[in-house]
Image 1 (cartoon, helix red, strand yellow):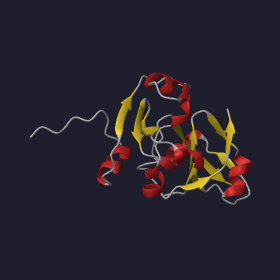
Image 2 (image 1 turned 30 degrees about the vertical axis):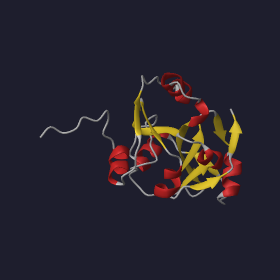
Image 3 (image 1 turned 135 degrees about the vertical axis):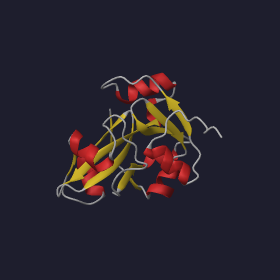
Length: 163
């Protein structure tokens, strides 16, 4: 019996399949430091619908995942106020990789190595469909944003700054 061929099998896609979540697969040509501008161009979707997965930490170095529109930046001050903690900063790449199990540029909020809190910019939840990393560089998945709350218990926050 031949196994059904998938574009990519990652911890993220394994997690979603195990949970019975429908998603579409969108591979694209990854460009180093290209970010969401490249993926949105390659997929032909608005950058606002491409969601970046950011590994951050609080003042006690406790990790968290922050999900943000591709065309926005995170206000760490507003995020710290919202969650509440004293301060929030991005994790160094090697620390982010250790917490998530993913390479920077290929981080998905699904199937991470360690359980950690997930925060999502509230306006992301109002979109019909989002494109989020599927667990490797050059691979996004299209998914309903409600899955972020249902599966990851993502907490809505207001911390976006216009890019």
